[in-house]
Image (cartoon, rainbow, N blue to C red; front, side, top):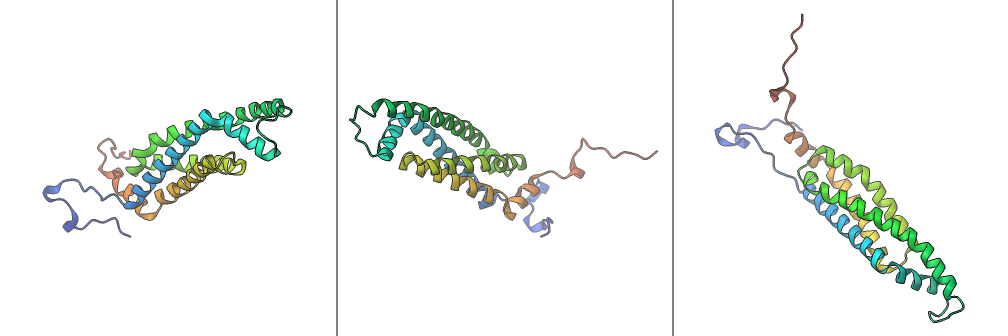
Length: 187
């Protein structure tokens, strides 16, 4: 496709041409927002109700009653050991979600650097989401992990579609129009 803009599509008065933002960037922004929100919710659930979710999970896996004192100490020890891992993952979710929230506006604006950072973070989100899905401590955390995983994949795909690339290229000032670049004179 040509980057040439016909005179019929240029603004009157010789103003700068502002390309129309494609829907792909809106989709990438919404997918990033959904990913960040599900990551924040998953971290909140893990930090607030993590011990009780783990305790229920261990009791279900062992097939013992919750009131049994014989295995109570063993279950509590296992829950405390597992909660450390769950808590660490929750903090990673929070960190990644904070970065994704900071990327929302630059991704919507088609900034190449933001799309690259999103593409670098997405595999970490997918791997962490798959890890949470395989643990399946609770249906709630599993659903939130699946939502974060699918949202990250959707965000990366939509932010690099051809319409997004054309928009980013059209917004980038050409090297010929920059006043700070002066041609070097041969000697």
